[in-house]
Amino acid sequence: MGTVGINFGPINSGQGFDVASTVSQILAAEQAVEDPWKTQLSNLQAQDTALSKMGTDLASLSTAMQALTDFSGVFASKQGASSDTNVVELTSASNVAVAGSHTIVVNSLAQTSSQYSDKISNAADTLTGSLTITIGGQSQSLTVNGLTLSQLAASINGASMGVAASVVTDTTGSRLSLVSKTSGATGEITLSASLTDDASSTAIGFQQGMQGKDASLNVDGLDTTSASNTVTGLIPGVTFQILSVSSNPNVPVQVQITNDNSSIEQAFSNFVTAYNAVADDVKTQEGKDSSGNPEPLFGDPTVALIQSQLSQGLLAGAASGSIKSLMQLGITVDQAGHLTIDGGTLDNALNASFGDIQGFLQDADSFGQKFNTVLNGLSSTATNGAVYLALKQNSAQESTLNQNISNQEQRIADDKSRLTDQLNTANQILQSLPDQLDQINQLYSAITGYNTGQ
View 1 (cartoon, helix red, strand yellow):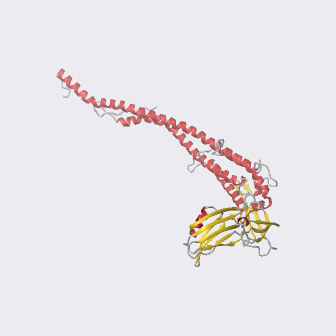
View 2 (cartoon, rainbow, N blue to C red):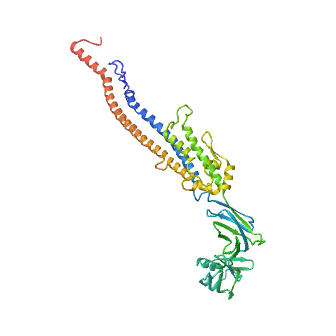
View 3 (cartoon, rainbow, N blue to C red):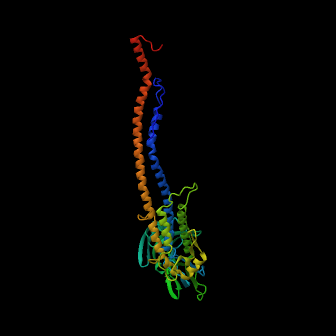
């Protein structure tokens, strides 16, 4: 520890010394103890930043891989097309749909049953009587006691009688419209009504607007029916809409269900991009920054582990049929450690060996499952992940360093208070010396008669 000099001039000058400056010089040595701790803390925090970026990029790579290995992911996605969208329009194809071609002939469309009342010239007239509606063997009755058409419609809707009631008005008058909430034959409305217009004492009758009928169609040679024009289940996993009757029954509509290769190819492209981001993270930490200093994780074993595990992971996993490696899918590794993808090769492979590629990614012990295991072992979120453990170790060291710095700061604060008090006392003594010497001189002069001032 160095020494601190105090400059207070001649002892009888009374000018003392600068206490604050002197205390700062004394404490500088204690403050210097923190320097290596702060340097180490700064280095650890820089490592945390680099590790966190790797963890984020590894998570993105894991997400990209999951899209390929998830059983309900892009490999389960299907596309479809209709040869005549005026007759049949494809609505959706779920993950249970199977790629293939289907033929559909539409003989008739489904109809929804409806009834409508006689016209009432004045919509404000009230009605009295009763109404019984039967749908699918279930009957419900309503007593009508002085209700207008709009009030009657509201009462029917509020009673949940299986129909949608509304008032239709034109230039000649108003009617009560009843439309079944169930399409097809099972939704046929059977109506028993005894209503009277209170104003004119005229009986109000009902007529059938539309008969409830099931659609009639032939799917892949099988005659069948559908209560709705939105057809689900006749082709597994496929929902389609029938829009009109086939103009020529001898020319069926062709519905083609295909694998969604474009989404799969995009998922592979996302995987390659995410992998290369991690490769760049690793390569960056192997070099020096713009100032020529080593990167925070230069020589760190975690970086070496990530590089090694990813390289080995690309070669891991059992073959699936004809697919034994990523290279057969057009994915190769260049000299910089980046993946590249040939879209044409991948598309040809998907068309020729779709099931084998799916197995290569999703079967037990496949490449996809093994690579997922590798990523879990490197994760920043899994408790056994390499990045997670590295960050945890850094956190423990940072906690110790911060505590050391905090303790040292407290010691410095205590010493500052103590030294300031002591040096202030000493300074007061030094500043009082001229007065004390003057008093001694006066006393000496009084005793001896000798004037020291002459």
